[in-house]
Amino acid sequence: MQRFVLAAASALAFAFSGAVLADGDDDYDHKPEAQDFIHGAPEVPSEAWTLAAGGRIYDNWWSALDRDEPEGTNPAYPTGLNTEQTGAGTWRCKECHGWDYLGKDGIYAKGSHFTGIKGINGAIGKPVEEIAMTLRDANHPYSTEMISDAEMLRVAAFVSRGQVDMRSFLDYETRTVNTGNVERGREIFQTTCAACHGFDGRLIDWGEDGAHNYVGTEARELPDEVMHKILSAHTGVQMINLRAFPLSDAIDVLSYAATLPLDPPAE
Ligand code: HEC
Ligand code: HEC
Image 1 (cartoon, helix red, strand yellow):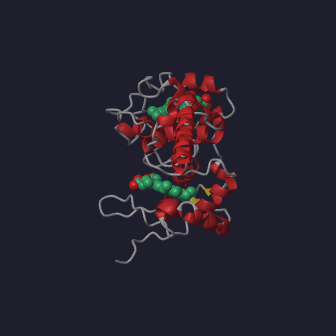
Image 2 (cartoon, protein in one colour; image 1 turned 180 degrees about the vertical axis):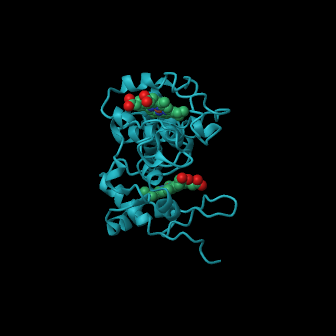
Image 3 (cartoon, protein in one colour; image 1 turned 120 degrees about the vertical axis):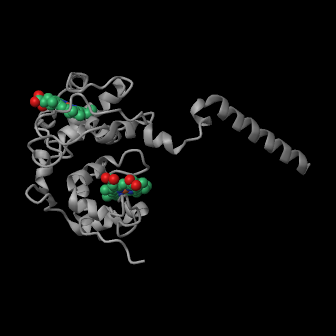
């Protein structure tokens, strides 16, 4: 008797799970992989995801989208103005328009990243389709193999609706953060960023050739770049971003990050 009940119960359980599998679509059989998250898109993209993903294309589209790195210098990159960049980097949106989106009127007004090209802030609020068309013009020799139409709409959405005015929290003379609630930044950093970067931001070191580069180093030296990464994440890796939260949270994390240590930990 007991055996019969057990057998009936397991037959029922089998029938039930079979029904669920048969009715579900193929996605239930798909085992998610990190690459799907890093380079892919969710089935129903939210506004915050779209803007962050567009921001990563703006940062470095081939790393964000898992495409081949472009060969040689971008033919649209200006020469003859004492511009200094060459190679694949000249294909990055940020190289001509800046991490602060202000081009020649922002942080890239001087220094090795100067191009004399204006920012993208003039395109804030423009229709996304119109912006996406601009991104296939002579200034933007991107093929659909490099950036597909759907991906171009994503970066255009970022241009239209995802830019922040960094002049409201950065000192442009010293390129440092000049506002923000450090205590609020501390609680956000310790409960989110620290999971990967450690409490003091030194768990991941992306410095090269013996130099050290931690969250603290970069927040102090390149706060405009760090703000872009806080809102969009670093490309090609598993990192979170704060796009879904109020901008003040991102500013507070940036100001706290700028207090973290620069020197390598003692051995
Ligand atoms: C090699 C340099 C270069 C790169 C890289 C570049 N652009 Fe541009 N972009 C330009 C130039 C030049 C203009 C025209 C500026 C002008 O009209 O004075 C422009 C104009 C724009 C405009 C129009 C701005 C306005 O005020 O209407 C937008 C938006 C834009 N670019 C976005 C992007 C995006 C997004 C990317 C990356 C997918 C990108 N650009 C990559 C050089 C570049
Ligand atoms: C799930 C893990 C994870 C979390 C959480 C995370 N990061 Fe990252 N972050 C990474 C990885 C991985 C890199 C790539 C490091 C490298 O280039 O070697 C990175 C890179 C960075 C960079 C450097 C980008 C560059 O220019 O090379 C900054 C700055 C940064 N993260 C800040 C933050 C901040 C601030 C937070 C919290 C809002 C955060 N990260 C949360 C994993 C994470």
